[in-house]
Length: 312
Image (cartoon, rainbow, N blue to C red; front, side, top):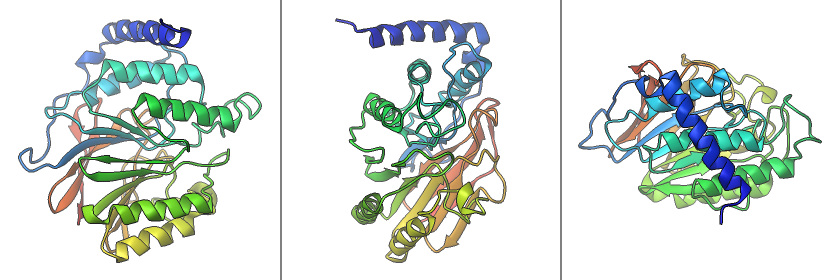
């Protein structure tokens, strides 16, 4: 028996298929492949700040459909598609429906790993707290996690992909721009990084970069009051021999000298542009036996945009 949500999903998917054909989405982007396909251990795409709209045919969703078409033109299967938050624009159910539809049209990746952003928490200028209580926004985020095959009772979660840990932080309060991470979540982060030490490298996804990193010069422009605590935990595990790559978005800044930082040995920070507002800029993450390559890419035009290397 099909409930109304399932019926709406099918209806929206059909609309998106028509939209893709009309707007030429299958023609966007170009084929790409790992730098060394014979040695790559993990192949993933990193993106942030999709800000999916509730109107299927609004220009921002038309553009996202085209961008996803470019992401899907991989010559090698993608092990994961990682979203560093703000997957929706206002945590509305119709936005999640549209995002699920766009993903269904371009399913060339094994799994989706979506962290929570401030827009996904409802803590934005779009709408009011009364219209989108934090509990409602959190429930919708966790429902999307379940759609992606991730079971979690909290806004945070940790998954393994080919043996590598992806640890996603999630705010526990509705804040306008920042996140609140409780002592319980900080202890959980510490434990998850400890469990990942045998893999030698781990990936932490937080929508906002810690204050002082990636251009977030002040506490209120980055992660928030827990920035120092998070940095201490990350540095402690880096000092113990675990290479950590912290992946964020939120800043809506295109790739620059501030996008990739290595402030401590074995501790790296990558800040991603807005996939929507940059016109399709994200990155390909390729993990090899001794290093991880981060290859920024314009998925709409099908062009590489430089690269970074993380040794581990």
